[in-house]
Image 1 (cartoon, rainbow, N blue to C red):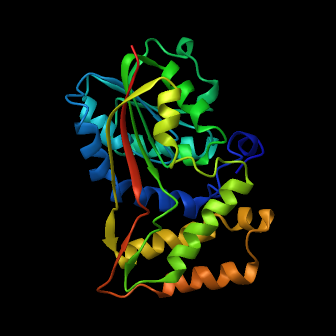
Image 2: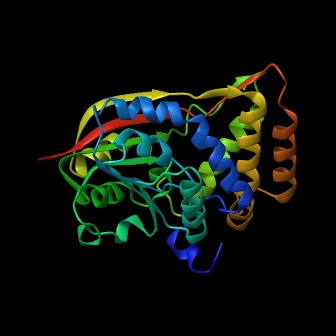
Amino acid sequence: MTARDEPRIGTYVLDGGDEDLRRLMVIAEVQADSARRALHKVGDMRGMSVIECGCGPLGCLAVLSELVGPEGRVIGVDAADATAERARSVAAALSLDNVTVLSADVHELDLSDFSEPFDLAYTRAFLMHQADPKLTMARIARLLRPGGWLVTQEPLRKPPPTGYPTSADLERYWELLHEAAAKSGAAPDAAETLLANAVQAGFESVATGGFFNVMASSVGYDIHATGVHAMRSRLLRTGVATEEELDALELALRAAAPQDGWVTSPFMLELILRRSL
């Protein structure tokens, strides 16, 4: 992470290093179908102009590219320069010709930065890192045409990820992430108050839902263990956990995966919203 990145992503708990980016790539694959299902609720997206806020190294860019087709356009935005550059490389490797990735803070974007308002915005595990999610959604609303869509999927603090066999380490890891986010300045109840904040930010609710993603334990425990590793420096800096606890927690998560087990993502709250006319 560069010195330029740090102020712009100060509430992002994880470190944005190579392991974190690899973790985010796996999450993008695991959650592709749930993103596609949510976006289908909007209807036919062919030809749409869409933006993903906090796209990471891939996020939903491939799904959005597929749904808008060659006549549409997709803009991915991430505040970390290194992450945005990785996303550009991934988009090129996947031949996502209708995708452009910007290194920018969503709060600093304006319609004058683009040729036209967007038809749809998408976020996943992005608003949970914001100091003022209502303000962030209001900024997103300004980028949309009247009646434009916001599809957001954000993880709740409770219930935590679970699995079989069950592991208390999953719950501890998820609690640590939220404690570190709160101490870093993120709103502690960002997902829980998402619907209320959306209404105040100028959106109307079209549909509300939620889901777990279920994956093989080898995949799920690796995602969660890598999450511990990627938020290590933030956890230590904020005093949320000790080195000994983090070493033990990461080791326990990496050793917990039986061949015939399964693990879930956190529970994702899903909102389909429209900007008020």
